[in-house]
Image (cartoon, rainbow, N blue to C red; front, top):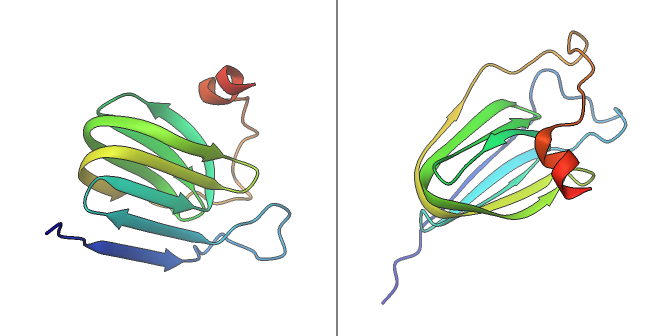
Length: 113
């Protein structure tokens, strides 16, 4: 019998404004420490098979694990999914939207265009 554990984290950061164009609420779902689905993703800063660093509506998020593979990325909808063995998820302090510098296109955005 397969054991299934699902965790959900939902919320809106202090910098989140529902009326902001393209704004998404943030949620994170983990299933069996093997699959993570996240909404409210603003960008992907870096990734490899052991770590993925995302910018979300709630701040920077690092996902660490083994054999990580990105399964879904849609920045227009703010959706992201990764599979592998998940060891850790860690948030950094949320960035202030008004103080954020305009970003050039990330490596992943350039790669997927």
